Structures are given as C-alpha cells and as structure tokens.
Amino acid sequence: MEPKYVLILDFFVGCLNIIKLTDEELRESEEYEDFEDFLLTIEEKYGFRLNSCQWMVTENLDIH
Image (cartoon, rainbow, N blue to C red; front, side):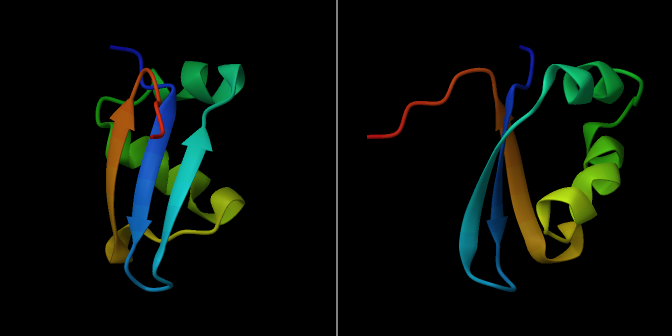
C-alpha cells in the first residue's frame, strides 16, 4: 500500500487533518524506514504536532 493520504486526529486543537501527500512528499517518505520519522518533517508545514495526535495512512480515501 502506498500511503497517499495521512489522517491526523489532533487532540490539542480538536480537529481531523486530512493530508493528500504530493508526489514529492511520497518520494521523500520512501527515504525513511519509519513513516513516523517522515511525518516529523512535515509537522510545521501542515500545522500539527505528533506528540498530541493519532495518525493513520491510506491509499484511498472515501468520505461518507
């Protein structure tokens, strides 16, 4: 599975962030053995802090 979307449940501000990774971010993420290490590099860009979040990745995203 290629993680195209990152869903971040942010407990600090009480929101759900849905991030569609760019092609560049997907390539960059492959350089990391642990995907969470990659997420640390995009915290500031997308405005979240992993230490106050739960996250998951998915290849496809369906919202009902």
